[in-house]
Length: 247
Image (cartoon, rainbow, N blue to C red; front, side):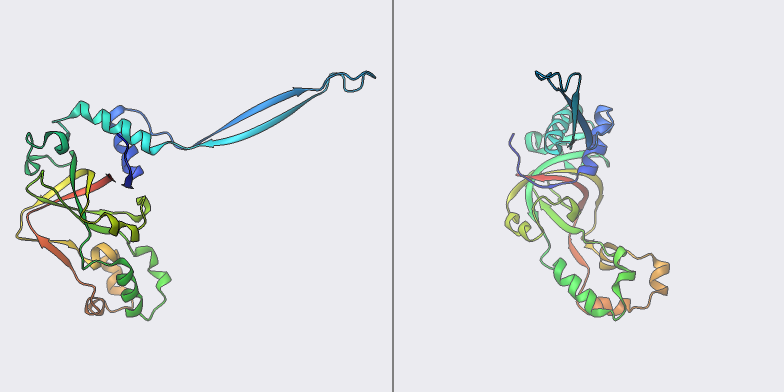
């Protein structure tokens, strides 16, 4: 299968791959190659017994695309136990019956809530606080909430994308909205409510511990008032950890 990846969380990939095959993930490694050259003897005898060495180094990085392909092949060995392929066998399974921590492969449509605009949220956030943002920059999360709608399941799925692992840029994600794609995810839980909150700016965007919120010199209520609101969708909803998205 020739995949075009939109998203690939390599940290999760190698973590789960090593759990499945029992092999420690191999990171980038350097190899050195030394070549020797013997200097010939001239007519006058000069240069006799001399040689030169040249050492070159090369860094070999793991091929995450190839490793993903091998990982998905190996998952077939635990089909129906801890891995459920809804693309090939949707008639066999019901997502609501899949156990937590199991992996699922589904075909569905990628959606980003219309109310979520990362650039807009960042701008509103910066304009709402007079203090220097560098002190709380480390607590700002730029994870992107997504919704996955699939004809193979009765439930919508929701998860978050870490921009670090986007193959396509954030702006380019719009090109894939409402298009069919394949999603490899880990089941976290199912929330059986009429309405499910999938984005809370104070928990998902501004990840500041509660004790620090009370001490920090900014107005949390004002943060909500500037238009950065919770985002909710109709339930029930399956919460998942997104490992890969490809077409």
